[in-house]
Length: 475
Image (cartoon, rainbow, N blue to C red):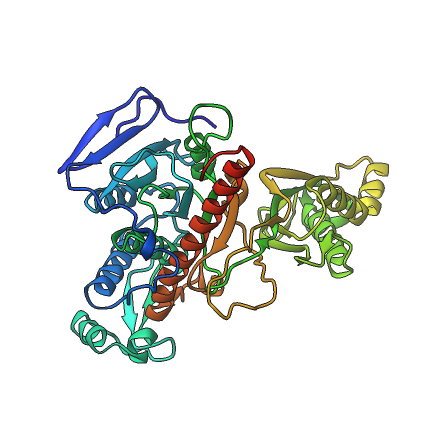
């Protein structure tokens, strides 16, 4: 897919919009720069407590994001808000145009931000997505996950001043509260904290917030143009931290995803004389039954790390009326791929479908009737994705390897960078009418991202020193 031509970045004062000779626009603020890196205050330094005004600001940002309707394809309002927000907080902001979602003509942009005074060539990128699934669910707060007593602004301010478990248990509800505004908010505040306390080099880390993650991944695919991984004169990103709800754990990867439409065609007729036609619904059910039987027997690709490949029949439709032999039927299917290659999965699925309808199709064709079932594969198809785990979230982080079953933008961003998958909140409440995250999870998320970035800065510094030693240069 290609980007829109002649992009315009919609930024508000007090920013100076600078047009550069590329397909992008840059917004530079006139506010003073952040302090430079203080090596004595780096990874070994304790993180300042997230409380008082900083915690209030974190919760206010999170509330603002949830309150903006940002269903995939309609992300422009939230990107405008975020570009203004970041630009007023010592970041240079770049808006990258992304083509509209299929069937829509609404403009939208990715956001790439980096500390003011730096070039766009950072080493580390924190990234999340700004779009949500439908439907929109308004923001609200309750005492806890199990206590629906509302928490108003005054109650929250009082809890912030007192701190403690009561504050951590406060639960925030609304679409995107977990997926993905918990990660997005925590990433912004983690980077701000690291810069303000001079614990990382000023120009080491940037932010990338993309559209369309929930559907086709068009935003992250477009963002590849921001990350040169060839000899283009710019420095490629060396580590990217993808924010998704992983229960506050560092994930070792996630299953692949493949989707297809199963289409059945039969021969219509009067339901009182079923032997005169071929019911497409029967064909579809036999094909799906065969596929599910193969799944249940463990006949689809699997692996020790990711488990079994699973099949979800998400939607079915067929026929026109109860008293008519259905002539056409279809099912929409999504698979979470745990092993093998994309071709391995396609071969297994197509064989299962063919085996399931073989007898019925052969009989119909002998009688001169139409009967066929075909698999139409979608464009979204990739094998399991492994991510890096050479950092820790907590000092006592000795948990077993942890993987997730949902898809992410990790495979959509090309390059040789390290890839990390981490974020606050749980995926088990995402996409549902009970989506939520606790204040404690948000606070821990900020600290988690801080810790990851600090460790990455040290790792990359050690790599640079080793490379210089190999070249015979002084570090």
